[in-house]
Image 1 (cartoon, helix red, strand yellow):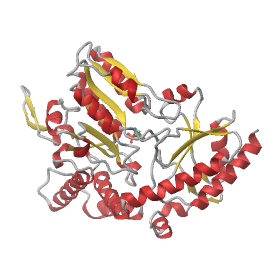
Image 2 (cartoon, rainbow, N blue to C red; image 1 turned 120 degrees about the horizontal axis):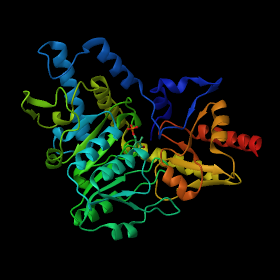
Image 3 (cartoon, rainbow, N blue to C red; image 1 turned 90 degrees about the vertical axis):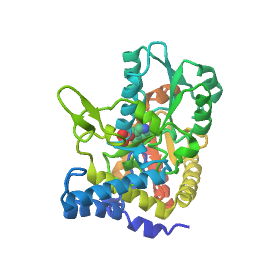
Image 4 (cartoon, rainbow, N blue to C red; image 1 turned 180 degrees about the vertical axis):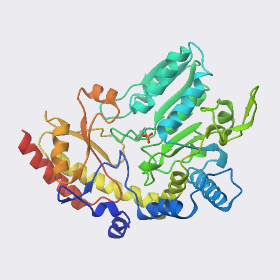
Amino acid sequence: MLDINKIRADFPILKRQVHGKPLIYFDNGATSQTPQIVIDTIVDYYTNYNANIHRGVHTLSQEATDKYEEARIKIQQHFNAKHAYEIILTAGTTESVNIVSSGFSSLLKEGDEIIVSALEHHSNIVPWQMMCEKTGAVLRVIPMDEDGSLRLDLFDELLNNKTKLVFCNHVSNALGTINPIEAIIHRAHKFGAYVLIDGAQACPHIKADVQELDVDFYVASAHKMCGPTGVGFLYGKKELLEMLPPYQGGGEMIDTVTFEKTTYAGLPHKFEAGTPNICGGIAFGAAIDYMNAIGFKNIQDRENELLRYATEKLLNIDGLKIYGTTHKTSVISFNIENIHPYDIGSILDKLGIAVRTGHHCAQPIMDFYNIPGTVRASLSFYNTKEEIDFLIESIQKAKMMLS
Ligand SMILES: *Cc1c(COP(=O)(O)O)cnc(C)c1O
């Protein structure tokens, strides 16, 4: 059992007020809040050992390099990669996906096929469309079902020997659906296709084991799992990262440079051109430690309980419909009758409640349901039943005002 008061005390922002009301933060799917220990790590870096890494012989540079490489090892261990150099530190999920998609642009040819799921975030649709335009490869989509799950039966019909890459999120950010990535990886591999899984929305809830999954690429962002913004990682199997060309040219990613020819550095530096987000990487490591100290089993148990509680209460509200009702994380996307989600979100904000409204960077899902968007409450282990009670009360109030 978690000591919720102790956990809430770890997050200084939870003490603030919004419009004179205590903040209730239900937008964890967009970004999670930051515990004091991660904030302290950031302050410690700039206070005590801010320096550029991998270059200097001086003490500060060596300290910063050691801490940065320690963070890489924390990420490696958390996601159980075989080698630390299979973890590329990036600016986040979006950049990680682009490293892979732009790399494949030079490997694919006309007529090759790639498959994405209907549940994707825009950051996962656009890079593949750009890649297809460049290469003449064809983009295919695994359709979704009314309950927010993927049609795996139809996935089988899309797979064939021309399939080169399959791309799917582990958890949908718009609906919270936990996708059957084990089955997707297994079936894609039978046709020799590589699989890239977007773990951005899964990483705060599920500890993925990349070796057990046998996944080829796995990506996520620190800021959805109690870390800072602007940092994340790309995991890739060694031989695949070696196969992909570098993403950007610059300092740090080279071995030797002359005007005739440059040779590239080995992994992971080949994909880490320029000065990285050093402080962010180190703070990402601290966030992983923080979440593991709480424990993912405890986090899941608590979030499942909050999800059950909130779902039951929400469904008691007349005219409220929840989108995505299958096996999922603590994300609740809903609408009330024909009230625009934005109007509900604005009233909730006045009452101190932060929810997300709109298409959640997943317009194709909204088109599937034929709606402009939803109100999304995404719960975290630091939320409480009292906060949910206040949300329900406030939604009732908003509904009265708007209908
Ligand atoms: C947040 C999110 C992204 C984008 O992450 P960035 O940190 O903005 O790059 C991609 N996919 C999913 C499923 C997400 O939830």
